[in-house]
Image (cartoon, rainbow, N blue to C red):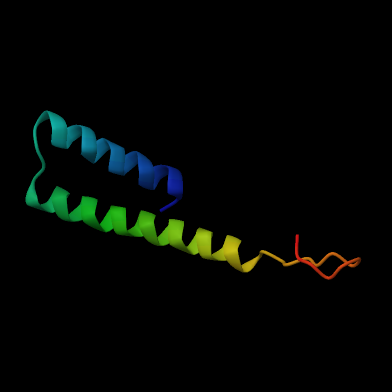
Length: 64
């Protein structure tokens, strides 16, 4: 499931929760979707951190 449809479904379930409540199955689906979303955020964040390169100033050897 792509991120847009994932967020869309999470939001849809959130609206339904406020209006009428969720069934047991919908509550379980919401928990799974939230976990998928968080895994995606963590994976992207980790990727960004791993791509950071330290660059040293050649004049005095200090990091910028």
